[in-house]
Structures are given as C-alpha cells and as structure tokens.
Image (cartoon, rainbow, N blue to C red):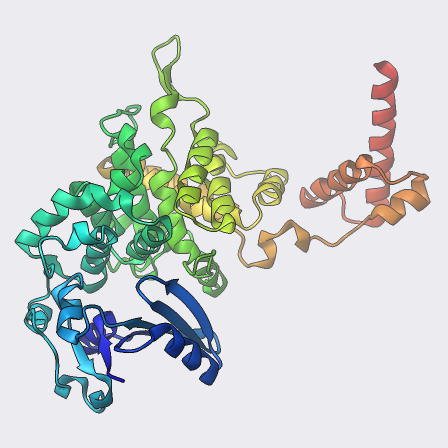
Length: 480
C-alpha cells in the first residue's frame, strides 16, 4: 500500500518540536490496518470516525503514550487529500518509506506552500471554506496560534471571524478536545481574547455573553466577562514556576504562597482530571466560569450596595451544565463544581490580618478534600483579576498571608485523614453501650474536630468529650 506521514506530526518534526501524535494516511483499509497494528504492537484500538475510516492506535511506554492516527486517503491521492486539510502547515506529506534520517531532507508533498508558511510562522487556511467545511477548525486555529506562537494570515483571520459562530455545529467531544488543548497552552488570556474577538468563545459557551458590560462593585476593575478571562490568565500565572520566580508577568507573583517542598503540589496540578487533561488546565476553565452566574444574581441592598447573592452556588450549577454539554468527565464536572461553589470560602475564613482557627482549617479540608488546594489558588487568581491595575502591595501581602495560613506544608497535612484515630465505632459500642446509628458519625466527627483544634490529644480526653456530647444531647432531647 501507499502510506504517508502527514499533518501535525510532520509539521512538528520540521519545527523541531517533540510529538507523540503520529498521523498516517494510507490508500487501503485504514480500520483493518489500525487493528492489525494495535495487535502487533500490543496497543489499544480506538475508532475515531467510521465514515471517514479513521482510527487511533495507542501505544504505552511506561507513563507515556504514543498515538498513531490512521486514515484512508481522501480523494484517492495524496494531493487530493492535502487539498481537503485545514491549514497549509498541516497540508504536508512525505512517503513513509522515505521517512528516514534528517526530516529536513525528506522529500515533501507541499502543494500549498506550507513549508514557506512554517518558516514565516504563519497560519493560513488551505481554502476559504476550511472553517465552514469543518467548524472544529475554528478552535484548532486558535489552539495552533497559541501552541506554535504563529500569527493568523489576514485572509484566514477574516474567514475565521466570518465562520467563528459555526463552532456550535461541532460534535461536543471534538470541541472539548480542541478547547481544552487551547487552554493548556501558555498565554491563555491572549487565547481567550482571540476566541472572543473571532466570535468563537460565546458561541461555544453562550452563557458567558451575559457578563459583558455587567459592572461590579468599586473594588473590581473589570466587568464580569473580562474578569473571568483575566482570572483564567491569573490562574496560569500563580501556578507557573516561571512567574513565581518573577521571570514574567506581574511583580506581585514573586510572593505567591507555595510550599518550600513544592514537588508534591506541582504534581497535584499536573495530575490528569479525566479526558487526558491536567488539573491545571481545568482550573483555568474554572477561572473563566467561576462568576458566570453574577449577571442573573445581581441585586442592590437598601443602602444601594451591589451584591451577587448566591452567585457561587448558582455558578457551580451553570458551570456543570457547560461541562456536561462539552462531554467532560464526571470527575472534572464534580471537581470544578466544588471549586466554583466554594471559591469565596478561603477569604471568609478569617478577617484581614488574622489567621483561620485550626477548627476552621479542619472543616475546610474536610469539606473540600483535594479541591481545597485548587480553591486556594483560584482564590488568589480571582483576587488578582478583581483588583487588576489597582492592586496595592499591602493588599496583596494581606491576601498572600491569609492563603499561606490555609496551605499545608506537605501533602499529608492537607488531609484530615492524617490525624491519628483516637476513638472508633467499636469504642462507642463497647464503652458507651451505643448501637450503630447516624449518631456514630456525629460523635466521631466531634472528636476529630476537637482533635484538629488541639482540644483533645489522647483517647481518655476523646472518651470524656464523647460522654459530654452524649449528656448534652440527652438534655436537649429532654428539654424538647
């Protein structure tokens, strides 16, 4: 058969970029070939598009994976196939049998001058109808601009703006993949602003449009919509080691609280949260969506003060609908809903200049679990995006001091489960003659809270506390 290396893999090779996504076009039964390859290499077969005869073979190398996407040539020839592709820099091909040695020496099929556009760092569509032919390309264009550091060719930018609204015609799974890949790239603020200017962002997430030109209380610099975009950008900065080292971005970022032993927290944010995307990427999305319910919850108190009562909880519900519409995993939906619902909580744990009580910290980590860490950094990004250019050094120092007092120094401290168990259900049955009931959970939680607060530290003290709680409960029932 004839087989060709095509598309993004070849593009990245020519740019000197590492890639684990290998695209191959063949003039044969692509699905049968993919199944054979998966069997031969002990990989996994994934059907991507039965109509277009496209399949993926996933090969595992320890913790890493390589993806072989195999498709039948469209149009019957490599030239016809390349004419149907999205961008000139992806409309390149080389015969697989000749793909040896230095990629710069490989003979190329390049009917649309993609190699010249690579050198010029220009993203140009193959045809004026590229975006209307396949609207997911509107998102891909934005992603490639961010990923490669390219700029849009003028006519391509016009076509993108003309067809940006067509993104709603894309299958949700395809839109999700391109959108999250775009959010994963550096300079996410620029990416979101480009998506907005091209009419893509609010077509994909129409709920965001309601936040445009919705003003906020005087302490906020931007309207609701822009604040969301800025928060996503600030999430990227507060999680970035380069920004924390003051190598870029705001000078305030050099004081972002981060544990001295930072390896475990970096690993926390690089963990995959469903769909093959990291928690850091999803936290940028949380930043974009966290205030999406403000327009419908905006109200004024009798003294004319602007408030958004219940916007966090309602925002969590609205964000969940958005993520489910994009076919995100339930793990991602639940995590972002928890973070958005409680994104105000870290600032409510203590007054400025004070630190939270041990009991408050215990309850915070008990209620939010792993999401407690995410919420702290969303809260920092939210604060930076709220004040914007108005931020003062004193304000930021107070904010960082509060967040620092909430953060644990290591992974084990972040979990209430790290507390040694002083009393259990067996003790409640043997020592207090109780039968298993919902009361067990209440009593055990009472002990753990007191233990976290430093009020009890031994089994004897825990037993005494249980006895006191039982007497008070009995008195309450008697009084009622």
